[in-house]
Image 1: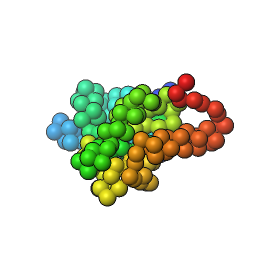
Image 2: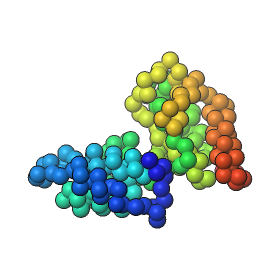
Image 3: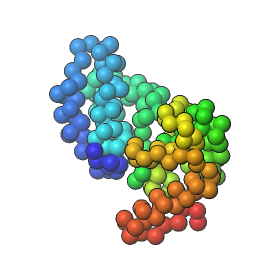
Length: 182
């Protein structure tokens, strides 16, 4: 996956090839049923579903881009903006909410000006607040990082430590010095 490929660098040919090979609807109803899968292909290729990809999918399936954006904004798993270097799913289900996830949501908004589906200004982290459940309630409140690691029993302090670790790793990898809160 070309994680977070900038919109200006999007090569639609791989997507068009996949669409031509795998997505050949026989009628309009078939087209509607293929939209989600086609968007998943785009997100897998680019790390998000860029506008150019939605246009290519719409053209190939014979549906409107409005229909596609309607589905993209309905399902929380789709990103329509270029993601950050890291992704976080912050659980806001019942156990996590009772355990204090709202404090974490508020902290993200107040300290980093980040709400669900948005990315920190320095591009380090894209956050999705999951109103369902991540399935690890014994770790509540919990966040999943980069689709692999779970960080549990989070407090505002431990959450801030996690954010600083991500930012430090990002700066070390790029050799940059950024300060999100200045």
